[in-house]
Structures are given as C-alpha cells and as structure tokens.
Image (cartoon, rainbow, N blue to C red; front, side):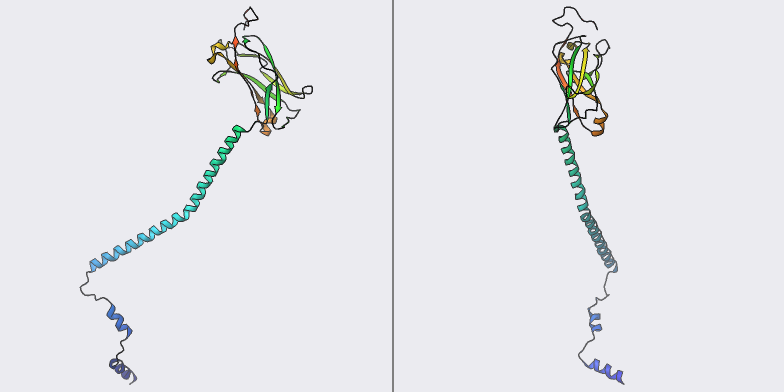
Length: 237
C-alpha cells in the first residue's frame, strides 16, 4: 500500500529523478559510425601516451641538467688549475742554481784543455745541506740545440773530467766543483759555426727526494778553432 502511494505521488508530481535526467543527457547510440569512433579513440589515446612520454623525457633532461652543468664546471676548473700550474712552472725560479766563478775565454783551441769552477747558490734564501753532494755533467750542443757526443771522426767531442761531484768547501763556504775539459772538434763544422756548453745537475738523492730543481749553466757562442793564435803548432787529438 505504501509503495503504491509513493509511485502515484512521483508520477503526479513535477519532480524528475536525477537518474532519468542523466539518461537523457547520454548520446543516443543511433546512427553512430563505430569504426570512426574507434579510430578517433585510438588516435586520442596514442597522442595522450606520446605526450606523457615526452613529458617524462623532458623531466629527465631537466633532472640531468644540474649534474651535467656541475661536470662542465669541474672540467673548466681542472683546465684552469692545469694552466696555472703550467704558468707557475715556467715563471717560478728553481730552488738552486749553478753559476760560473768566471767566464770561459773564447776562442778555444781544439784539443787544448781549459778549466772552470762551478758554484752552487740558492734562490729565496734556500740553503743546500753541507753534507749533501750533487753530481754535475758537462755537455756540448750545436747552435740549433742538438746534443753532440761525437766529433767528425766518431770520437768523443768532450774529453777530461766531464762528470764531477760538487762538494761543500769550507773555505768557499759553498758547494764547488772543478772541471778541466777539452773540445775535440772545431765549431765551424756545426750550424752557426759555434758550440754551446751546458753544465747541469746529473744526480742527487737529496734533490730527488725533495723535488728541488737546479738551474743549469748555459755558455753559448763558443768558438773552437784548430789553432790558437798564441800557438803555432796544431794540437793533436
């Protein structure tokens, strides 16, 4: 009885149930091209999925960008440090240097011995330990900076004590080395018709352990002649 009264009341009233209204809003399945609707549905879904993928890739790139920028900054910093160290190595003076006590008189005579004394001095108040020894070596170079070891006859270009130990001498109050050598070839056989002598540190355990550098002595433009103007005879090899 109650249900019947409720139905009559709804039918006689102006109230329309929400479910009925929603059903009226739905599109009618009549006259629909299902093939067309399916293709449109597939196309929309494909476009949506591609958009999501592109957003994911862009998001990944955005996340990688700070890391990539950090790596590039580090690389530039490393390059800058390398350049600074290279400049410093070229501009900072070595800790020690070799100097001649006196200049070498030229022209020299082929096959005639000449002597010179080498002193060790420190830069920036650096003092080399008195008990340490440095082994020095004399080398001959052409004017175009090529090392010469043999003369034109295949014999040693330098004779004498070309390798000497540098010891501390109390009278000099410094490390000293004495050399007595001779050149066995005239300089006119080489480029520029002159020779260059170089006196350098050859070996030192102390220098190797500390990393200290020793500035070499370079004596350029040495003329070596077959005869000395003060001698009439030609020196034998």
